[in-house]
Amino acid sequence: MTAPWRRLLAGAWLLAAAAAVQGQAQPQPLPPPPALAASDEEVPFITTPDRVTLAMLQLAGVGPGDVLIDLGSGDGRIVITAALRFGARGLGVDIVPDLVARSQASAARAGVASRASFRVQDLFDTPLAGASVITLYLLPEFNLRLRPRLLALPAGTRIVSHDWDMGDWPPDRTLTLAVPEKAIGLDKRSRLHLWVVPAQLQGLWCGPGGLALQVQQHYQAVQATLMHGAEQLALAGRVDGARLQLLGSGPGASWAVELGATGALRVQSAPQGAALQAGHQLQPATGASCGPGR
Image (cartoon, rainbow, N blue to C red; front, side, top):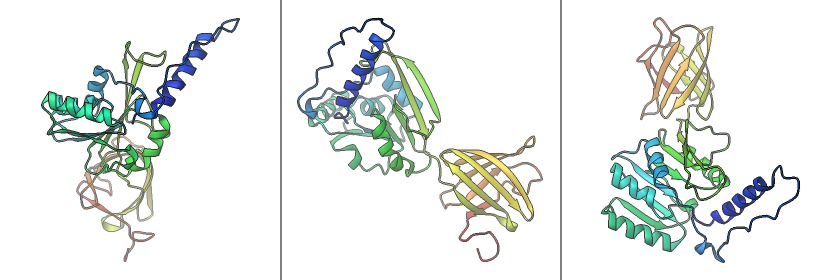
């Protein structure tokens, strides 16, 4: 999306101006602000350097089976590189018709027009269903507006944002690159953030023999209580896509659990002798407890 860069460029100028006068005894004249076009369609977009484009796609683990959507695709290089270098299919959306036309021409020249398509569309109106990878280079407030839709995507969907985060949703991984040619700002580095959409596991899960697992989830982080009769065991864990790793307090107290296509949690591995064992399945509770008639 190109229009937000009007504010980004102005903000970058203010930060650079503040840094330029910081610590000086006498105020110095501010550098002139960047020239901005009269209409949003003429606002220059911020080009993602090629090495950053490649690193974003590598961080997401893009491959031939992926479908990528680039929200605010600019000159189309992320989608084209995903198709050309990694064999993925991709869609880029931008509100500037000229950039979309240029992207389409570039895809044709690269021989990937059948796998890299572009559309004039507002990113907030873009359907995200079917994407396995989402790439972003937007302002923080746009990331936050998109966050509820991104969290609602299927577990395991990968999201990579150039520079900007998702507020209190922590990334699963952050990669920092030196980028001397970066167009804006005094810090010539790019920070690439990766999120893997976590399965939504909040609530009560019921297993065989009256086993119950109560899960409290905050994005990837989980606090859980495993209940069996009068016994209760506090667990902490982390969700990675559809996989949940739970840890108890004792040595070897670790469970690996995965959410299946049917909506059940299946235990992949468990401590020897634990009530919750490998092969057990847990179903979402239909009531307030896991007793008979749940």
